[in-house]
Length: 221
Image 1 (tube, rainbow, N blue to C red):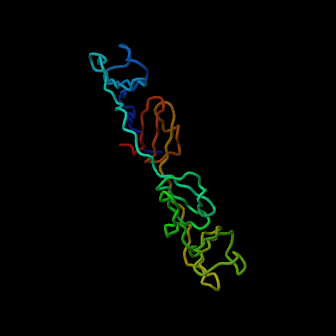
Image 2: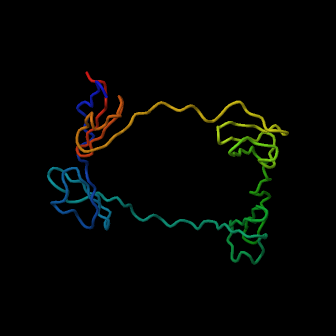
Image 3: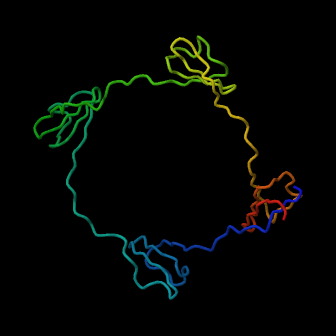
């Protein structure tokens, strides 16, 4: 701590921002200050206060009722193919998914027809598996490895790869060296003192929760 100084500090408190109020009807004359806003939840009118007060009328934020849309298609599903009675009362353009095969059917207004494709693809190939344990892998552990699989020794971070016959040390580890001490952030009420934080180092920060001031520990000038 020799020849270090916390400096004068910088306030992190900014000016008060505008407020948005919610209520019904129109805003009361004594509500808020210039720049504040009011949204009427019953009428959807939006008001913004100026230096002369709230405006007599606000801005309507809700548009008119739109036109009624057309009915969309219905998507059915089941374990078996659709029939003339199931699903009941389909409409033209409706779709049906056969869950067991992934096949898609479409209703043309009188019957269901297979669309000639399935959303269920063939099984994919087994991917590379990464396993881990407290020690190095052995011929019996992990069980059933395939060529390309990886293993991580949790005790030292070393990585092994399986060549189809045996495990081989990959020649690198996932555990790096210990890093350098990083900057610390202290908090308290009032300005920091050298005696209060004897282990502090240059680059450390202190935040005064009472005033909102942030201090940085730097070499004394």
